[in-house]
Length: 290
Length: 326
Image (cartoon, rainbow over all chains, first blue to last red):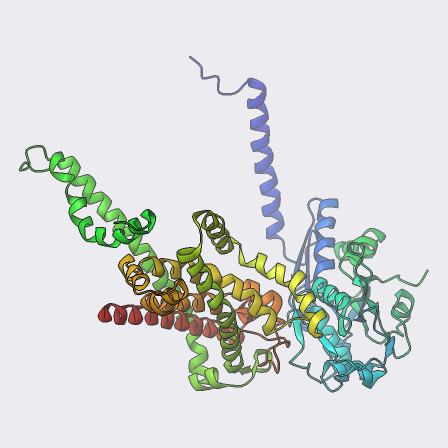
């Protein structure tokens, strides 16, 4: 007897599926063979800060454009700039501007997002504003009591992030300069924990990305301090007046063309800017412009 | 015997052990029906296979320990070679991203966390054990003992979460500061080590022969005098073993501690200041550590391994010493 293991229709379907699989694997193999400079594969390397944006954008981009692939790697801003200028990758992402010695490499800058760090305290804290140097002194442990900066006579409860944090890295560079964090500060792994501890402790001070100061997930409130007389909001960050902020860049060798341009345009589209960029705690590059 | 039946039963149990060997062998002769015939080949093979299976199980456990030790050792050894054992163990600064690999503050912090937890937790646990073994009515025991056993079953991350969201704000409210620090860790760890110490201490108290209790009572001693002057000294070795195991649990605890310790890489200048321990540094740093930093974390793991070996060795030595005495 003929083994009726599958109805005829299903057998046809199975054959079609196998054929389709073979065909698509051939296509994928074809893609693999083409060099990284080819039009259907894009390599994006650089800043780990930019990684959440670049990676989610790449996934969405590949979903929207089947057959095109975008490889994203987080290796640090300097390595990203180095690899795009040497031609190893198509886009180098960076959380800092070009250094003078990198200026002559023929790199074209596309700004893709704004990153601002808010210095947060408990809403009950009478201190509303600090200068950048006061913030630095507080986090370096030189100022230990709130009364030294116009607050109550209370010991400051320092809350720091772990060294893996991109926010800590940016805060260190922008605020502390060459200085070192007070080693006695509490070190918490994650923006959520910093926010929650500061929201509960009247004497605490911490720092988080501006995008996380207002949270729709919790009723706990924190107060973002005015720094050097500038309140942190989308307008001051976009205008570049809020001191603890930076711009996230895509660098390309020459003007972006082809797939590179398609991907960059996709990242700059309102879908990515308003959802992915904001979800990652950053501000859209167009923030405050309107 | 005219004492309480369940106590008597328990008391007799150790003596039964001596008979156990014979008891185990006793059922065998009926199986060999003639008493002299050899066992069948099938039975022999089955027995041999089972023996080897159990040997294999034991080997896997030993191999696991050996492999972990070798792996951690190989990974961590280069840091001793590079900066020197003394510099690693005795260095006062742990700041790996600035090439400072001294783990002395971490060792001291771990010992501080452990001793405080022990001071709070051990009396609590021994008290619980005395209650369970000597004081409690069967009804009270049937409630308390499962509760203590349940404490051992709660995952440590739950203790940590409890500490972070409930205990920490309370301590911050009472004493000021952020609530991260030794005090919070002590309270959490003290509760966590109770089941370990209480269960083993109860076993130790129960293995004290009933005759000793009877002798004490017949001399006119009160319950308290019997417990304090007779039973606890008699169960001393078992209780010390239990406490050492509790120490091992306290010093090795990671998840609960990392959530409430605050993780500052210095020796805290108060019991309300954040600190980092040998275990928590591995959790905090492993995600991003590379190069010498990563090697140093394996070095920390070696130190932890050696500390737990010392605890196990201490238990063995003390138990042997105890046997020698009795």
